[in-house]
Image 1: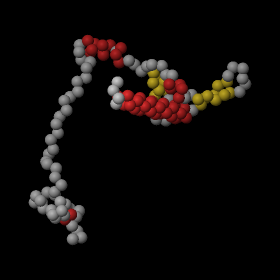
Image 2: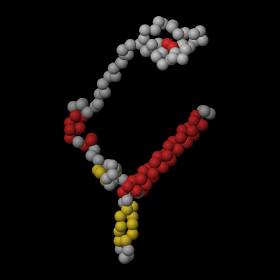
Image 3: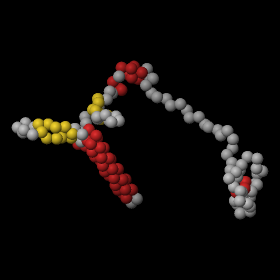
Image 4: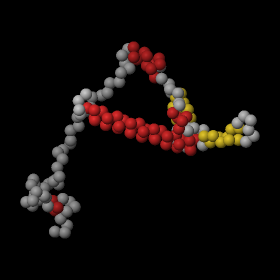
Length: 149
């Protein structure tokens, strides 16, 4: 490793650790917000006469979602767990892939040409009009200037 590569690597690792910490804080905050929205429910534990209240969903539960599942939060409705379908197991996708049609081909970007050339001089003003010798144009050359002159 060269002398300059090690500090660069340490800097990249530090930035990655900071991004992961920010992501962890975001997930925890999201879990807290969803927990507040979902609310609590009461359960009676075995051997106890009283009900105890438990969160319906918290940050730890969000982290432990199995692969292929997502938490859906829509408007003011209660959060719902949903199983997401896998597109690559769909028969139509498999058939399109076999025939070579499953690849998205983006259209070529078109080049936009301006309708007219953009200038700061108002239409009808002669070129170089309003130059006062210091490199600035007079305000009277514009519709909003020159009233107090």
